[in-house]
Length: 493
Image (cartoon, rainbow, N blue to C red; front, side, top):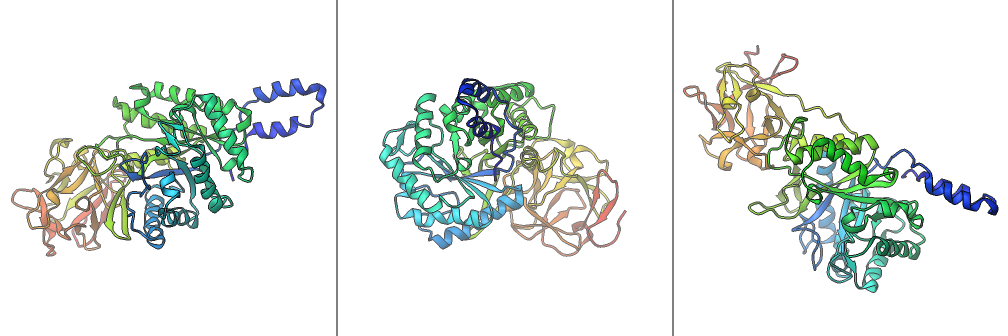
């Protein structure tokens, strides 16, 4: 259960003070220091509709189909949550609702996404998104529709302690005072819902939580903050740290940052503390503040979201979806982004995954990016020298990455024939960038089943039908320990 803020404890204690001291009590109540932050129990991602959740229709999450039954939604959701948990360490999912979702037949099936999460022990945050019916342009315009939707949701999930409720996402059409009144009335109208299961959005675009934090009517609730680069422009790392700390103020003990994100499929290296890239500075600074203040967070998006021109999903997406029907899997396009997210959650230190040399048995040479270039290029084998272009990371998701997670080993053109060029490319989660390491020393493309093969005349690397030759067998040597770890066969050094 969430730690109840100290303000609430103070309120109870002060209620017993003599009437003659009430003025002093109020003053003490309002100036009390916040308790130590501990919303870190929320380690989450947003699962969104592809194309964003601001939608005048039922919200069909990425990977689901409007024709899915309840049972099918449960099966698909189980696969998605397994990916969130195994790949990221998530224990929370934020899901959108609107009047079209709750007020139509889709609700019976959509509930499977909520039920699958709670059955797995996930916390769920249900948030209403502007749909043009109950709200328009960030403002409640039909209170009756708004209340009817929430009453339906609460009738089903009001007693489930894992489900939390965010009355409205980004109430930007209301002033801070108006929004505080709306959410105060929402709380008063649903007295059976514990306050520590309510997320109060910051005023505006979930950016002003200080005014909500100062409103005594909202004591005991969580405060949801949104934090993006496009809200304020470019900053240095230190400026990003100061900016977020200022946005949180003295309200850290109640704050959950339930939207923040950065590009995950453009090759940015979030391990690079010296980077001048604004996104890297922002994401590193954000996760630093979250970790230091023990603030929970819900990344946008884990899956789904806006569609970037030229690609099929949101470039901020922390996970990529693969498969059809209920046979769904997730992969991680940015290993460094994943590790930095986990750092913010307090799960690991900001330590890059270990790198290794991949030594070809036939030539004794190591898998190499010519010149260590960040350009897309066919890989080769060269004299082992532990250069930056020879340091590879084998990820849990089956990717083989290089250059701090900026590039993935890629079968060009998703080729499935002998001679397919193998080179570097921005990580995108495709099966042509996933590999299986065999006990016999082979490295096989998940997409084609072909083996990573060295052309011993040119030393270029390609795919070829697996035949057992030494030019298709590899040894892993950890670059830190300098110890060879044989994948199979003989000839270890």
